[in-house]
Image (tube, rainbow, N blue to C red; front, side, top):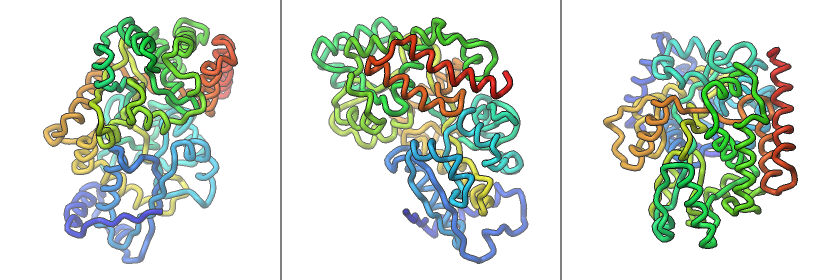
Length: 434
């Protein structure tokens, strides 16, 4: 457990920010003079853009709330993913928590009554003015827990998307140009394999492998298919061209040596560290790695590009700040969210390799960060955010992990894997009354 303290010199600035967001001149419980504690959970690494921004937000929060101590506990994505419903239904719930967005996660918790309704605070503090268009899709859920409408149950304050990271030095060594088409991309992968290099870093035990399969499916997908899969606006054929191509091609990549057969048990951290150590020329993963790569890669030059041959990529607003219904310090949680939405924290996020939602564009001066934000803007301008494959059904994340592991191990055919993926999805539709 870590306690982070802010500089007193910043207190006046942050008090002004809090006052602007409060919408009331009446004293809050935070002004009562009694010692209080804000329990905060998130799963961003200290060197990531979000980790740096939230650490600074904690300092500023404590500077503006001198009688409040922030008790921050770092949890892993997996910990929160697997235990959220149980923890939030107990006395162990934190006051504020980072949580995954989507129907199967934040939507499910909202339907279960475990999350506080943030609609009033969102309007009062003006968060709804900052989160427009697709950014608010993942923040709002109806009474069935389906995203896109209803009440506000979470506040995202950054964007994210999946891209292709590449080691420029290895590309140059093997005379590989940045591919512009899917055919050029697979030709590049062949070049690396012929040189005895496994090209794509992977992790089958967590999210990365399933996102690769989904990205491959998206190369054959159109908007109506996406609306059907993610928002239940139509019928999804799991043996149709989209998922069939994704699963078949993923399995083919393993057989061709693009993806290592021993990657089925690896975790995302294993994948990221291996890429940062220069062991792989390519990593297909999210913008949440960007700031960390910028901080930790010292021995080679690197870059990124959107997945060739696809008009859509996995991505959305970032994870959500959610306030558990059992929180006894909701007012403090709202104040903390407000600070993370301030220009100062948003600018820091942007200059640290994140994709801010409310930064001053002129304040983003880091060149790598500018590249990232430009790519995100290009993707969103084309309406190319396709959300994530595990969102449509409760427990779907684990179903997809098992599916891609079976493809990597070759223990099941692609048809068998697609049947297993289809089952829980169809069951969830029936439960929702579709």
